[in-house]
Length: 221
Image (cartoon, rainbow, N blue to C red; front, side, top):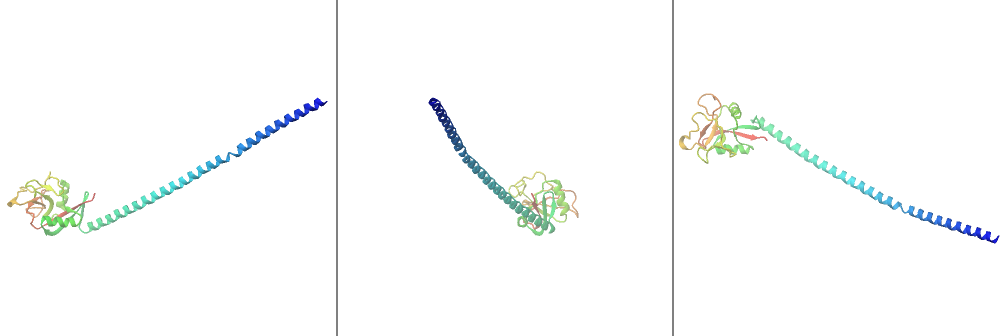
């Protein structure tokens, strides 16, 4: 009977140890589980950092949009101002053709003085690049022999435009240029030996100091 009691006691001790071991393992497991929240805290910090980055990106994009809008507005206003100025100038005697506008200076002056008057208007003496442009000049300014931006003052017989371009196609009156008197170094258009201009060829070489009217050209592009 005593042996039986010992056996029961041993069994109970063993069960107690098992239960204690299970409780201890369960406590370790619970303790391990309670250590997981820091990971959640790290994820939360990442989320906050992402949110901050997104806010900063939105601020940056908004700033760029504002800057571009201000620049666009300024350029638009500038173009509007230039357009109004151009329309005002055209209303005051400028004539439009192709990519340029033209103005007839009616004060008779030397070639160089007439050029200065053109430059005061933001233009220069006209450079004629095509037959169509010459026809436009003849039709628009038919009543004046007028200075154009062509000269051979540097090298006799080597006619050049004011931009340095050599003359390739000219519209000289018959027998011109003739260097009459030995110092006709500036060109004019509108030359005629009759009451009306006939044909497209109306250029003549002339002494640069002779007072004449002039034609200014302002290129718009």
